[in-house]
Length: 498
Image: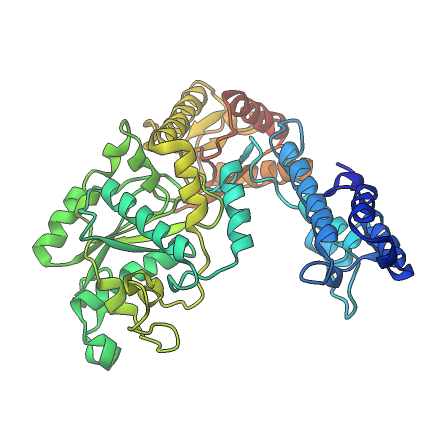
């Protein structure tokens, strides 16, 4: 789309004005003004942010600028889904700081033109990582959902805060609907459960722990930690006072699931709060075939669930869910009078801000709501089941190859598959300290070359006595079986001479 397509043409607009304005109303000023506007429309090098809305008569220029931005984004999205494109154009930090081909990160005291801002937008995407690329396996959150992207655009346009119904009427009610849906899927009675969306799994886990502590020691709200015993999350042999057990449903590296029923039995016996970190594994609840791995989660007191991981919602989107209604508010509320007046015109139960320790809270619910409308629960199920099938396929292929070794021989519980690659020189050497010291170097070298060439991305790490191994995860809806085969061939290509 070129500049002439931005809105309607200035020529047509002039004709319309000539017809609607009496000849005696036309002045030289009008002509000058039209010429100036046309110049701005065709040359954004002479236009600035101050010329955009809400500037008087900034409507056409605003349309043009935003359409140019959308074109940049559409081009990027097309490249993202093209498996022949590079995942990234890698440069070192010092190169970005020094500037690349006119891309200067330094900030000026004077405004830059809209044309330069468009160049900056293009370069920002150019030198970043295409996390929606079919061969991006680096993080638990990957992929690019177009409906979720549209939801994020609308959210940014609305630019509101989630603390009261007053300023976010649709979004606060939408959050209530989503939380009820998620609590019901866990297995809790929707009318008795509660929750809040928060900025990431770590904060959701923090909320779970704060509520657990408040439930057992409500006096902390008025008197502080000094009046509490030395409480701990995990009791040691020296006998501090446990108040909460945190179980994991889908660990970050291995994708492992704790025995939730067994843990729930212990918590009930000792009257301990049970929190389940299902940030990664929570999405599996949407699969009728695989949700059994989270059996017992319905007995938890609180759960962290990140839709921005397995469900593919654009970052960020995380929820803390609690089985007992009212605890989040009782634990965190400060009742700030400038926000939470009791005599408002509407039902103040939808003023959710006092359930959090934040004041400002980003709208993370709309993109999830819109995606759920687009896919339905069954659409998420199909997507998640396909990830599980891809993990199973990858596991079976590696199992047959003598230059790959799985960290665990058993079939993976989740979409995580952990493995080592052995180059020919190490393949037949018996396990020893010396061999492991060499093996430790292989994964970092292969990944470094992948990044430089931009062909694929997956993570590696050591764990305990296990030297660096690759961790493959499937959470990218663009990934196909051919991409899995490509990755295996690429690892062998880059690693065979190491």
